[in-house]
Length: 449
Ligand SMILES: [Zn+2]
Image 1 (cartoon, rainbow, N blue to C red):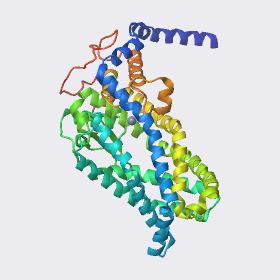
Image 2 (image 1 turned 60 degrees about the vertical axis):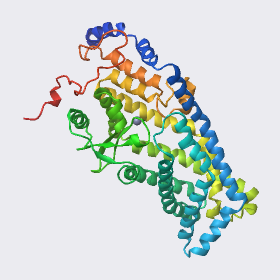
Image 3 (image 1 turned 30 degrees about the vertical axis):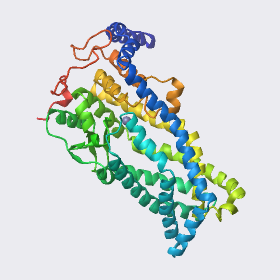
Image 4 (image 1 turned 90 degrees about the vertical axis):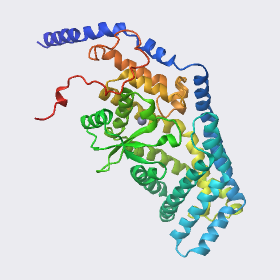
């Protein structure tokens, strides 16, 4: 009986699969992927490869600049001087620590400013990736610095409170504090911080907005409005997000995506962003990243003992509970962070990959997803080696993402719209149209009578 049943099941499965296999055999996933990648060539490809590969070295140079700035603050006793100043100004220890935190953030920003302006302004302009004038860039930088000064003012007394109260087990408490702080930051940033840099306004009504809201409803994203951000102020980069929770959920997309994307591409990108929301990626990333931070704090605890034992007297740092030792902790954390780059990137990349497949399943536009990915190739190298991708990529590479889309397409050739070319790579430029993407009849989408 059991044998017969499994034989029947196998036959039924074969009967179901055969038409799909027949179609899939006509569609070469690798050739389709290659055909898409081959559309980005010559100077454009060389430029984006150079920009992205330069970013690998920036990880190292940024770390060296941060370490050098901290060593200056320690060896010239600026750090212990700022601690003593804070002690003269304030009576309470938490306020002394908070003031030191503000002093530190500002002096560190001054010392690393040459690198910051090279990386954030001159390098971006050299690659044609920034639309900001120097005064506007400086104004944004000043705003950002003010926000991080306030954040340090609040966060540092909490962490040092934990260090002083629990000299042995503080890495655990510091990790918990940082995790809550990151969660708070990512949940309030879209509502309170990002509007300080850009203007958010409701997207113009129309079929495109309606199809985005429909996609949201179909996938359990409780957002009633789509916002449009004037990101073209800063650059031409395409971006969107779905953020918030507990009633603050909102969908935002930037004007670059609206200007540069076809309706199908815009939906493909929004499907990806909704994937992050539905799959709870913020909470997952905060949990995973906190574990990485926890290891970093343990490393800092160990390393502090070593460095303080050797140089503490020279630097005027009393003990680990003395905030003047913050640069020591930053040095150790920076070293750890460089070493942990592949781990951190892989955590994020894995989530991005999940959002990609969610978006493909939700929107069912593999070709539009592929062409949208190619538009990101302006600042992301498309075709890295596998090792390069593991170490340096916080999103799957263009090749990986286009390949995923073509694999999805190969497995759905039967149920895609009949005008889709059945074999070989699809036309690389999808039809330009202002109409929303036609939706196949979907019984679940029928309005409730
Ligand atoms: Zn994403």
